[in-house]
Picture 1 (tube, rainbow, N blue to C red):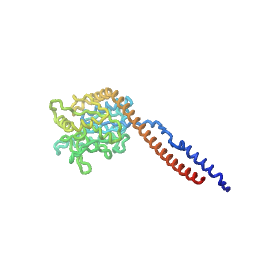
Picture 2: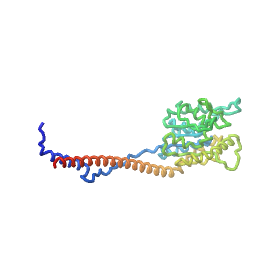
Picture 3: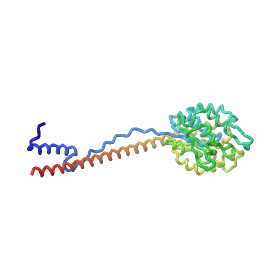
Picture 4: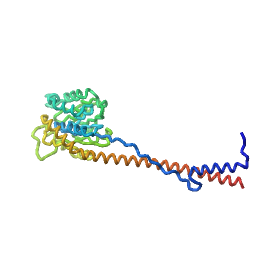
Length: 344
């Protein structure tokens, strides 16, 4: 290897320093290149459906789902309380709304009502559990094609319980066990009753499943200044009154609320199932402009937030590059001073 003559070393050092300075943009004010921000890729909005309780009024949920799907609104997750858990389980299992309507029309009420005299004439609920499991082809909740949650109330503590795994029919039975009408359901040493006591429309459960945008369907009984004429109506309205305040707060966290006109349908009016389905269709159609507008707004907000995050990352990268360049400039300055001393 040939050694560099001593008289050439200063020139080589100066050339090296010049290259270093050029990389930082100049000898006095090193400036890192301006950040280049690429537009973030579009993000999909996960739509959740929160189906409320309301006994026979729950057939309205089928009409809502029919119109949402017919108009291109694809639901990713579904949470249900009481009657909403029945429809939600069937939908989450992969059944389309037309199949659900066929099942609803063919449903014999007596096939899901098993009264036991020794328990005070209460409905046991085992028939409902078996019916749901047969419809979902014995799939457990955590094997559903569409994420599903059934909301119930723990009798011992009054706490909201969200079932997201295990026996689907049993979870639906627990969610639908109207106090005073159904026997409480024993699961894991605890007892559960209707989810409408604590969460009439399960908006929060839909978000727990990962929904970014929640469409809530409220079919709850409203106090209208008159007392219901039958026992089931009295119990149903009492539950609605108990959960009214908590339900209103939870509904406010939904992005869109659909309210089918089913007030005239009693909780035991199973013969009005076709009217309830039609009411659901009409309410969903009326809500479509609001749903599309809110989805567009939500999408714009998400895109803006993603762009701001990308810009922030680019600025951080530019700041790091600037710091590295300034550190390099400091090293160059020290080398220049040392070289000047050597040449004197």
